[in-house]
Image 1 (cartoon, rainbow, N blue to C red):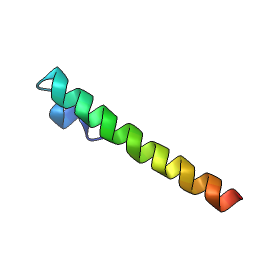
Image 2: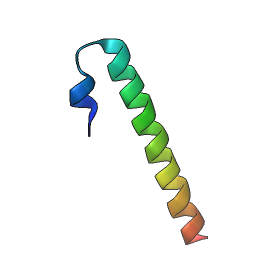
Image 3: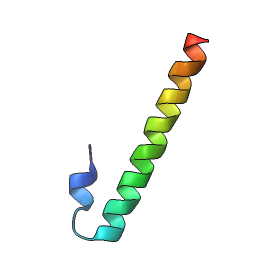
Image 4: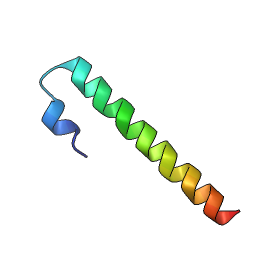
Length: 36
């Protein structure tokens, strides 16, 4: 999503991917809770 902005260095890109994965995991957990 917004990872293109942090494409200058690999470390910032990794941080962006990490935060995006945490957000995605939170969304999946929320969907699972709603389904239950």
